Length: 161
Image 1 (cartoon, helix red, strand yellow):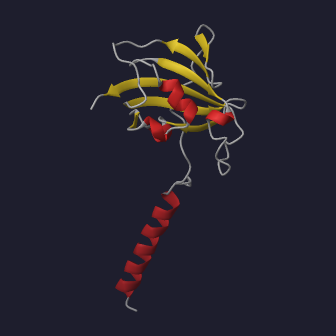
Image 2 (cartoon, rainbow, N blue to C red; image 1 turned 90 degrees about the vertical axis):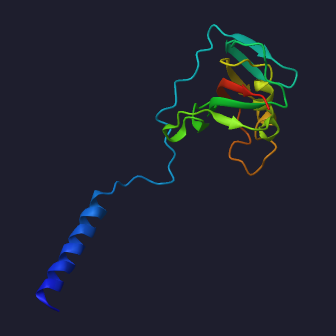
């Protein structure tokens, strides 16, 4: 091998080594919840308990003439926590996202989340306390099947078709 090829090979090896060392060790599958807001304060919120067992707190009423109906498409900011531990398991703010989540159909949501959105107005904020039977209790493969869930929800927009 000629000297120029050896030098070029060492140069490439050095670049590769520097590139490899400079890479961070972050897990590409780890979800970042660092931008999730603190839980809503419910100390002065109105508490509502429904016949199904859903409890929700009205933190802010919202404005506008329209309320969420079962057939609506909505955009929502939300954070889901396990109620007893406070552990976040999902959020629209994950990985530093700043846009609301678009739910084209409320039918695809867990029953307690869907029920908690019904009647909200744009800009409204609620805390939903969802018992297992209205959450993932009917899904034995879910790690959340036995947990009571807390969702802090802010309705950004009701989208009319």
